[in-house]
Length: 82
Ligand SMILES: [Zn+2]
Image 1 (cartoon, rainbow, N blue to C red):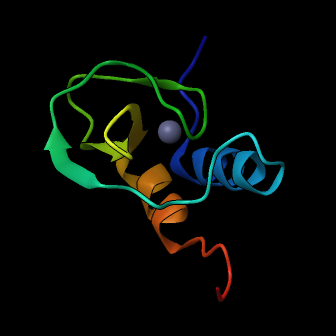
Image 2 (tube, rainbow, N blue to C red):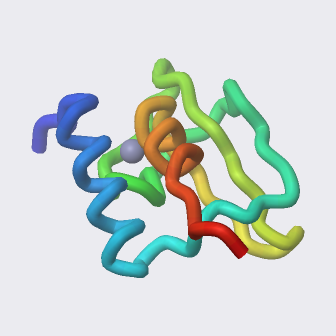
């Protein structure tokens, strides 16, 4: 199975956020440039060792990992004004 392209990844991540399958970003810490492999929590595509990726920790217990482009989508999604 071929890797999704960046635009497809962005769309998949955005879809996952709007459908409620990803919590809105209220993280405790972010680890940019993390060396991770495995499934991206945004688009669901594999993160490869060569990809620039982010690890996001929510409330110190839940950890997500994202491609660079998927994190960008996640990061700019606002839960709205409190
Ligand atoms: Zn991704």
